[in-house]
Length: 385
Image 1 (cartoon, rainbow, N blue to C red):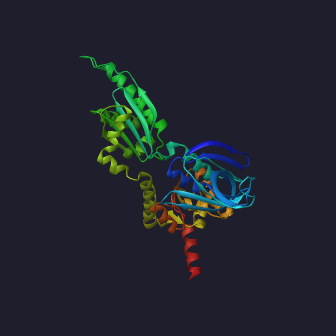
Image 2: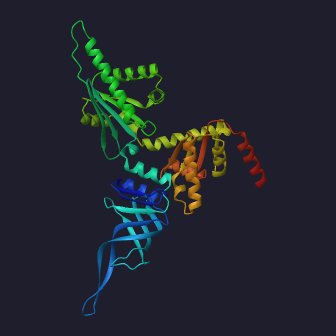
Image 3: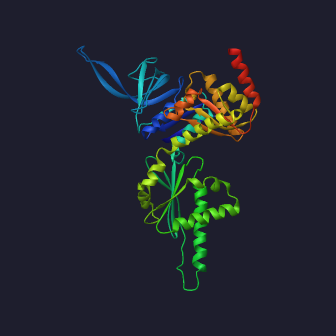
């Protein structure tokens, strides 16, 4: 997704102009557009014409319309999005108040205006427009003295950093210059990894090189992480995967991605992260039920106690037609983030999102047990009986 223009006032009213570039962007757009918004886009309209002789004909014309959105239809198989509404701006072909359905097209810009842009919708735009957010996989392609730090998205590979250090050759009886330069090179690569890779989003980091460079680099990186107590690197150690590549140039990444062990590791990585989070919730529900709750009321009460460590929430809840209900979910997400909790928004198109929807669409793993919530749950169930 490409962001062309963003005009949002202090009261959070305003408009954004976007260009969907790939099928997945239609899914993002479906989650952005809500009933009551106004949408301006290019569309085709069948227009009746009358000739001077009185004969009536019809032809199709391309025009730009602004609709007040009344219905949104998304075809998940074809990734097509249709928005139905009434025309709210003067147009030579379409009367004010007339109904029309716009089918949003890839690579054609549209402008979406809202009276209230909430944090969840704005974050969705940021994620859709920043390739770093959609990149599940990162890669460090290296040889002695040269490294490329890349992000791999479903459609492209982006070079985020290039590290070049001149490494002197080993001399007989004196390797100190070579070793010092190599250490300086490794340190710069580690800094570039920390600066450019979002560990909370990236599920796998390939370290590819010829020879033993990758093993030596990984040994150095984790030895330094232990010395400096670098928790981010140590906690994400399992995400690093060493593979062979013929050089440290970007084109060698293709060899690494074709490696069968890599292919199996990378299959549906974003979805795999959601599955693990849901699995952790079920395990917690089984072994420590005082630290796992689902249902909006229970989760809100856990949040009031500042107990939520991980919030699991389905994106379909943010498409709720009732503004007050939708705002309630947005406030919950904002509050959990403010209290240093992790928020995982599940895609309802994925199997894990469907499972979460069966659990009311909202669940939480708690930092500490909240027995009062369990008592309330027992009371409410006995009342129902």
